[in-house]
Image (cartoon, rainbow, N blue to C red):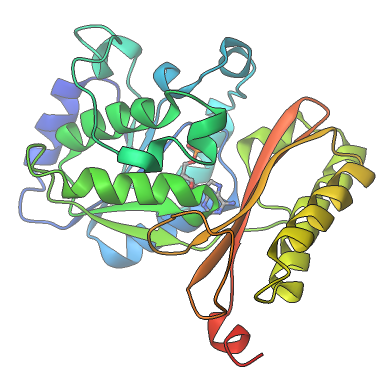
Length: 289
Ligand code: AMP
């Protein structure tokens, strides 16, 4: 694996792979098997896989969350080597934002940026667009691989890729959430949980599963309330949301007709660590109720 730290080095290196299919996996490091599943997918779709590790300050709406973000570079490099990643891009802040971090453009995301994560993390998705836009311009990949664990982020990047003025050619490939045995979604932030809390954290998945198993047209509100109650009864201190949305448009749904494709999404705090997760409903079964 080649490790490059500057945009100039990266461009130079990628020139030698001009006619190859490039797959790109952007990350913030503290890698786990979920990240590696994206590398594996890229390896099977592309000739050259580029992974970036960059903790993007502009997508953190709380300085404390940025300050506490785990850094495990030596282990990350080892995992990427083992996964046979071709190039690791490890840029500094100045390489990604040579003109400073103040955004020079605003990305038209409409209501997608104001709901769910956007409502609780103001500015987060503008920051995500800013960094993905910069990285895509540098890597110019054919494919970008992202995790459905960050379901709304996938929708945001899907929209970013459609913005004609940006002229990105990459196709987004989103992949299923990789989970612990407890079914807790793997996340870099899980490293901040104690062993005891790691066990409790599985309740987020269980609560979302409860919704997918119980939801019927007419019981939406009761179902979401019960899921929230479960979390609060099982060690979570606060719940930002448990919500239903159209699985394609992500428009929030209060009354479900039993047919619309659905995703249930949740975000909650366990001992100061904010966890998110989601499940897509098996609608073909639900429609038969
Ligand atoms: P992050 O380093 O958290 O910014 O994540 C980098 C990429 O890995 C994003 O596309 C995430 O959605 C994806 N990712 C994070 N956790 C998982 C997981 N448990 N399973 C699959 N992909 C994941």
